[in-house]
Every structure is written in structure tokens, then in C-alpha cells.
Image (tube, rainbow, N blue to C red; front, side):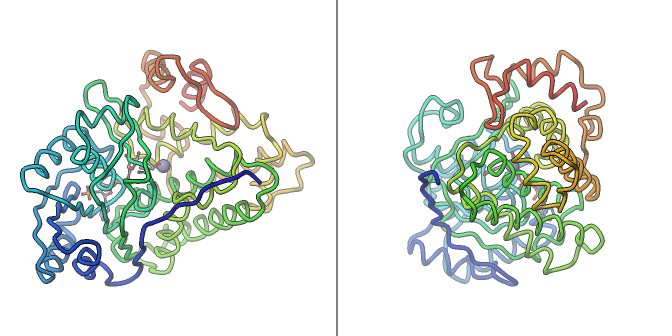
Length: 394
Ligand code: NZQ
Ligand code: ZN
């Protein structure tokens, strides 16, 4: 078993009506809070959630200003706008009301206020953030796991570059999770989030060694649970219990739990998808669904036994005669899950049917950081491999 650290400082407040406790929870964190309420492109206004949040803050006597307009694949320009606003208003606490994009934008603003210099330096790996304003969230979509993760992913419009930075100081102080809030999601976003949750687990699981049984069991159970409840939500989107299972799975999949003792994580599918998100603004989970089956078939020969374990423990497939045959049947089964929840399994289905060879070259050039890195723990992939995968995924 490999040595590991597990750090999850985020207080989780889970269940119906919990968003109304937000004012009280902020007061528990700090008595003199001056809050930036950060949100997305309008869903929280349409659903009335923003009004309820503001009422809770008013009732608690908390000063706040609001800043909406975060878009999926959140933009650096909005981060700069938020940093300016926070400095002008003396903000000392950020409340993200929304999904991964809003939380990630909040974390970036938090870095920008708490550190000198250009915040993009952190996303460009020139510097490491030393501090962050305190962040908390009222989560409205089960997907990215940013509510408990140490990560933030931002897209710079100049060059359409999407990059992530990780630092413990950005972890949310608390995360309010009411599964009912996710019932207003478009079906596509619900499914996209479910894929992301599965993928956060698989990226860790597939690089796993042989002697971390408890982490394997947690991961396999988590993936089975998401698949089972995702299929329920396709038919019955208002099913509270299924929403709750998926929302909690989303946090557990990306708060470090499924990585404890893991020998080498993969993350290649995420890196390949981030370039798609940056250049073509696709939904993150849908982009993952579109590349994962091709990636998996491309690398499976590096560790068929591991993929065969996934096939056995998640899909009950173990009768195909060899590890490789079981592994391939497991990949087929996962691909079918994506289809069953109406997710794309190719780039064409993702909406990129006219993707050119030149665009693929640009994606791979960016993903390889100008051919200065490889990606992936199952098998190290260079630019030529990336081109092969994008091309086969078309
Ligand atoms: O902006 P609004 O109007 O709120 O609409 C959003 C958005 O269009 C909508 N939505 C969210 N909650 C809703 C709702 N619509 C109706 N009812 C609700 N309750 O859903 C759309 C997607 O929202 P977004 O926040 O973009 O989704 P998600 O949580 O999937 O976040 C995606 C971003 O997170 C990054 C992704 O790359 C992407 O940029 N990731 C962040 C990670 C992290 N910080 O740890 C890890 C992930 O791997 C991922 O890379
Ligand atoms: Zn993800």
C-alpha cells in the first residue's frame, strides 16, 4: 500500500432545505464577512435560488455584493472582473452558487485577491498560489466535484487555453448540497455530470496497484451506484433518492477518497477533454464520454488485468476467456452506459463532425504543452498518441 495524505476540510451540509442555512454557516466561519455571491448565466435567478440565498444573508445581517455571468468552461476575463470587484468592495468571503464553473471561477478570484500579480500565472504553472480567500458553495449540479476538490479549471480566451491548478488553500469551507436543486437541470447536464463522476473515479482506479483493496471496493461501489441511479434519472428525473445518491457520489469521487493509496493516476482523458472544452466549449462530462472509449481501447494492452477487474466488479463480466477479452467487454459495457444516458461516444456525436486534421494537430499540440510533456498513468501518451486518439474518436 502506497503512502498517502487524505485531507478533506470541507464541511458538508446535505439535504432538503439546507440552502436556507447559508447565512448561519457563513457567520460560523467569520463574524465580519463581506461576501461576493458569485453565480452563472441565470439558472439560479430563474429557479428563485438566488433570492433565497440573499434572504438568508439578509436575515443573518451579512453584507454582500453579487456577480453573475460565469459560463461553462469559465473564462479568465470574468475572473479578472471578480478580482477588481472584490478589491473595490472589500470582499473577504466568496459564496459560489452554482456548479463546477462557478466554484472554479470563485477559487480563481480568491487566488487573485489573496496573491499579488497576474492570477493566470498560477494556471500557467509559473507560480504556486500561497493563499486564497475563503470559499464556500451552494451546489446546483452533481458533476465536477469542485465543492470538495482542491482544483480550479479556467479558460483563457486569448488562444482558448483551458488549464487547471490545484491547491489545498482553495478547498471550500463548506458545501451545501440539496439534491432537489439539481432537479431543474437539463437532462444533458445531468448525464454529463454523471459521466464526470464516473471518470473522476476511473482516472484514479485504472492506474491502481494490487494492494489497496478498500480503495478498489469504494471505487467499484461508487461507479455501480452512479450507473444504477443514472439509469433511474433518465426515466424519472425528479427521483430525489437517485439525485441524492449521485450528488454524494460526485463529492466522494473527487475529494481524494478514491485516490488513497493509488500508485499512479491516469487523467489522460481529462487532459484530452480539457483541450476540447477550451477550443470548442463542449460540456466537460460529454467531452469525456466522447473520448474515453477510444482512449480505453488505445491503452488497454498496458494493463488488461486492471480493466478486466473493472469489467468483473462493475459489470459482472468475467467469462470471456482472457483478461484482454474481459477488459474489452468491460469497455464496451461502459460505452453502452454512456449511450444509455444519451451521452456522445464519439467526437462526431459530441457535435464536432467537421473536426479537421489541422484542428486535431492543434488540440494535440496544446495538450502536449508544445510537445514538452506526455499524459497518462496507464500508458504515457505523447503528441502522436494524442493525435491517434482524437482521430480514432472522430
Ligand atoms: O450558468 P447557469 O445558468 O447556472 O447554467 C449551468 C450551466 O449552463 C447549468 N446549471 C447548473 N445548475 C443548474 C443548471 N441549470 C439548471 N438548474 C440547475 N440546478 O448547467 C450548466 C453547466 O454548469 P457547470 O458549472 O459548467 O457544470 P459542471 O459542474 O459540470 O462544471 C464544469 C466545469 O468544471 C470543470 C470542468 O472542466 C468545467 O470547466 N472541472 C472542475 C474540476 C474541479 N474544480 O475539481 C474537476 C473536473 O474534472 C472539471 O475539469
Ligand atoms: Zn472532470
